[in-house]
Amino acid sequence: EDQVTQSPEALRLQEGESSSLNCSYTVSGLRGLFWYRQDPGKGPEFLFTLYSAGEEKEKERLKATLTKKESFLHITAPKPEDSATYLCAVSMYSGGGADGLTFGKGTHLIIQP
Amino acid sequence: NAGVTQTPKFQVLKTGQSMTLQCAQDMNHEYMSWYRQDPGMGLRLIHYSVGAGITDQGEVPNGYNVSRSTTEDFPLRLLSAAPSQTSVYFCASKRDGSGYGYTFGSGTRLTVV
Image 1: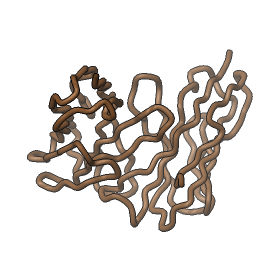
Image 2: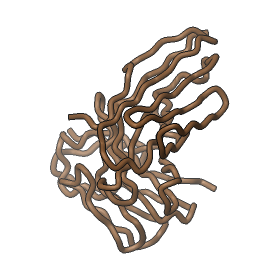
Image 3: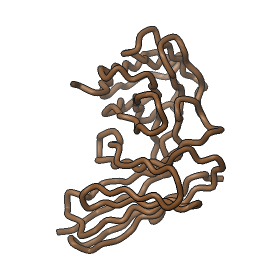
Image 4: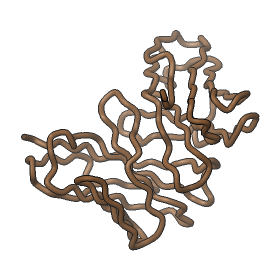
């Protein structure tokens, strides 16, 4: 059973059309929830860390929020350069050492001009 | 500041061959990890290290060995390559502390034939 589930798997938006990506998790003892961006042929790029329900973080057109069971990545007025795969990952107190991450499968986002 | 450097970028192996994937970071990060990424699956943790001389297994360690003789380097060894090890491998590093996100390398694309 997946511990981290991302939806939708793929999303196509028009430039300027705001939307949200979802990451739900079933782990207990959440140490942190992470959002990464991955461009084709490259490694994931760190975006945000969230720790507790109610926490929010922003970076340019992106805002990440966290509840007790899920996180949302809100994209406001996206531009074509925001096209990428967005990965969600969790770190657990009972999980792998070195803050080992459990990743979701990602949401492939395409922003059309 | 190069970040996390992985070599080679591409490799083709024959079944049964062995090889070492190199990973080096210049950020003096204590934590380092190896992940593999397969189509339709999230990144999965292979091995990790919390400092020089200390390593441990992640979610999918079978068929792989690691060592950490210096803070900078964390090589991943494939002992006897199998087609199931065809994947993209990412090395990542981070500072100590749960608040920091991992910095990922650009990956090694390995094909075992």
